[in-house]
Amino acid sequence: MKGLIMDYPLTLTQFFERARKIFHRKTMATRVPGAGLQRYTYADYADRVCRLSAALDRLGLKKGDRVGTFAWNSHRHMEVYFAAPLMGMVLHTINIRLSAQDLIYIINHAEDQVLIVDASLWHLVEPIRKDLKSVKHFIVMKDTPAGEIPTGALDYEALVADAKPLETWPRLDETDAAGMCYTSGTTGHPKGVLYTHRGIYLHCFGSSTVDVLGICERDVILHIVPMFHANAWCVPFAGVMNGSTQIFGGPNPQPRDIIEIVHDAVPKTSVGKFDKKVLRERFKGWKPKACAIGATARGRSPPSSRSPS
Image (cartoon, rainbow, N blue to C red; front, side, top):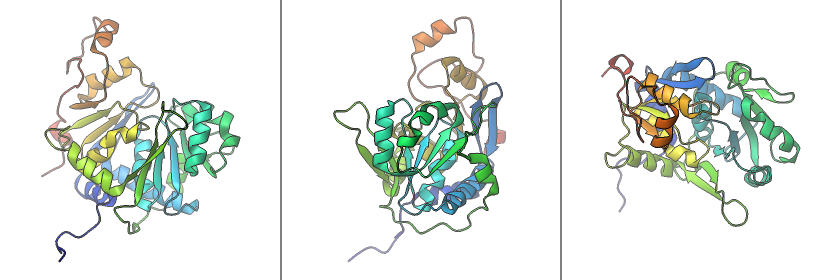
């Protein structure tokens, strides 16, 4: 005899739709060099995710196809985090710090159909572009004011703007692959690991418990762990599940950039490790007004940014 209660797949679609309906007034922000934090709402985020999903579909991608990202932490990267898996595609976050040889192997082995790249990182992709046999489309995101779209590449913003928002998501199984990461620093070639929708779903619930990270709606999360490293410990997904305010460090963040974000945005959870002694010595005499330097900066979002009950 089988139970008949709550019989539905644990997929990321549930997180996304809940966040769009309940947390539409909450915000995400990305540090833009020379321009401060660029902010938008979860409602804006959801609209762009739906447009990006439609754009990927229009490019001919289908369920199971791998969508590679080669990018820093940003709201655009965050859009791909949901746009690909919600279409049944597999998000493949690629470590930007690997050698050209490893990058060629990983991208070809994963058989990425699309590679979404930050403009500030294009100089690492251009030399190996011809060796990436499976990639049919290169999509470039302008992550700095001076960013340019290389010849032969697609403009991320143009793709999103021109696409009509997807209205209906495909039905997915919780055992479908949602994400893919590769190991580094191991013997032999890098090894690929797949995350299922169910695995990420349960991981997010675990991260939200008090004895783990305790992620909740009141939090302001500053992502320090790279989004290309183990899916940033799945914290971006948990942030959406809970409707947390999320902040991304943008291109090549330096210690001062992180401290300035902490100073201005007062995050509760700064996910990642940094050396307190190094920061204190480097910024001696510079005193943040809202928090102390430590492994985790703690604070709460102001009342005006919280969703109404």
